[in-house]
Length: 282
Image (cartoon, rainbow, N blue to C red; front, side, top):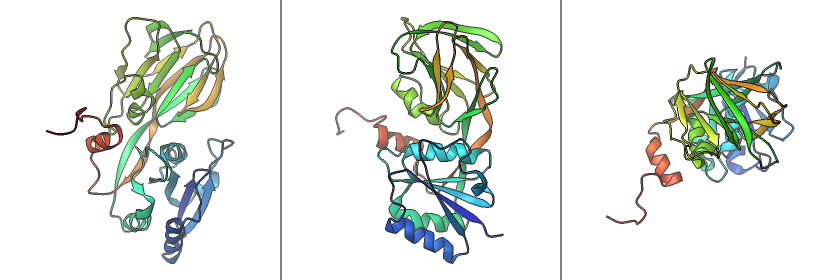
């Protein structure tokens, strides 16, 4: 059976850019089938469907958002993902588009390693749908800007009650995203723990809490409606009294990495200026 490679594009990416076309032709010459998918806002959680059968690699073209979507699709199927940067920040993607063909060759010859990243799963009590997130789940009021009461149960025991804009559960990957903007800790990407953060709580004390990967977090909205978002995309509308259980998913996302890899702290310095003085010089 011919092995396949899937090319997944941000809606604004030209699939016929010369480096992409050259990589596609190169794979064809080496006996691979290449299929394309352009993401849209109407995509379902299983949009790639049968395309994943026989697929050995997914290549995402865009920025971190495209990689997040591709990673959620790939996790349950155990297919590795190679992120190609055609976006702005590009914190999660590793390869620039000009280096695409050499990267494909290194994958094809086995000259790579897999970095496993934790993802999250969430289920609204009483509903059958299982949602997944690479970065974070956020519960909030939606378009209304007002405080809501949030109740948090951790492993079956009451943990907190507060009034806030909402609550967020993030992975190590998400700790350098929205969670970072809220003052949360940065977790090394190979740590599989959770970070729980209240969104702008009406309180003099506000600290994110790091929880073990075995933790089961239930978030309740006792007196208001809200929404659940997964990596910034609407996952579910929540009625008054809704309960959402969040935990680490048993599947992992396999990201393709090449050596010598850019170190995590080097990436933090380059993308976020972490650990650098305010004034350059000695």
